[in-house]
Length: 138
Figure 1 (cartoon, rainbow, N blue to C red):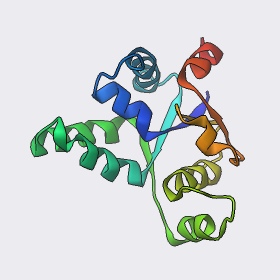
Figure 2 (figure 1 turned 90 degrees about the vertical axis):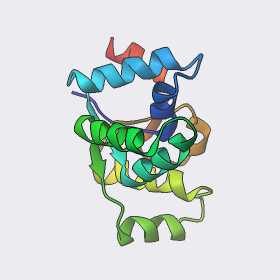
Figure 3 (figure 1 turned 30 degrees about the horizontal axis):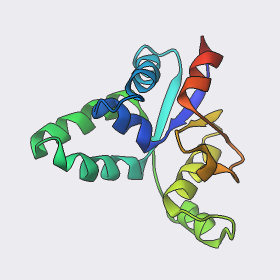
């Protein structure tokens, strides 16, 4: 079974019904829900989602969304070790992406599924677009 870290943009595509990305994000989420793959998110994804979705959902709706997501995904904690590794990495240009890379590395995940693969150019865990990941699984 493949084990993946899902980038925030994939979840946003799904929750906000963003075209033309919705269909692939839905397929990824469905694979997670149906336990065809093991799905992980970094802890800061939760707070990012809660903040970004404030324009689209009420406070109580966002709480319910996060609660449901916590049933689907394993949430990888962010700790001092990961933060320090990201901060001392001279190649890291984005702390958020760096933390996701460290989370995926710590858990030995197979892929980071994202629409922003260039942001993960220095990752030891392969970053892959949703459509490509879907073709691998199917």
